[in-house]
Length: 168
Ligand SMILES: [Zn+2]
Image (cartoon, rainbow, N blue to C red; front, top):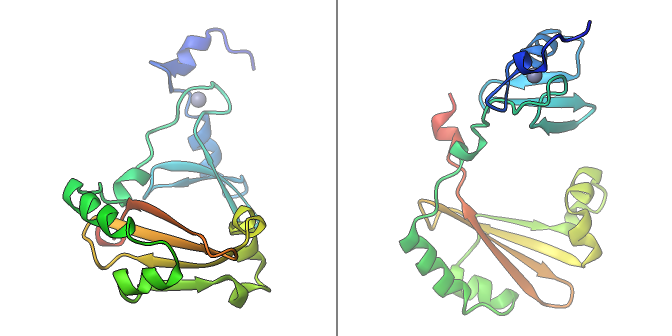
């Protein structure tokens, strides 16, 4: 089928051709729609690849709700967290300053897990040893510490996952 007018299929840069919906409705198609997140994915084996543009018209697909699943970090909490993080130089400091973590991953425990290995592939190459995660100290933040073989510690601060509360 030839499209007589390309513009029919796009509106203000958005997909307007509905082809992705049609494919997602076909259970045999690898294109799946996640209604909770308002995202299209290509699903094969254990992989989910998010699709941002329509394959057929090139328009933007509907806006993902993924961002709504994470709290917007509060400025006050960020300042407080950064003040604590600034004092941390090694693994022992983490526990002394932050207390026990909400979760801890030791990479050695997962030496046989391909899932973990793939997930942390780049970290592995850099010698990641373990990861501490703190969530319950804050309403809006999640803080991760990655500890490397050479003793260095990297921290990252992000919005706390709040999706469970809102996704029913
Ligand atoms: Zn389209």
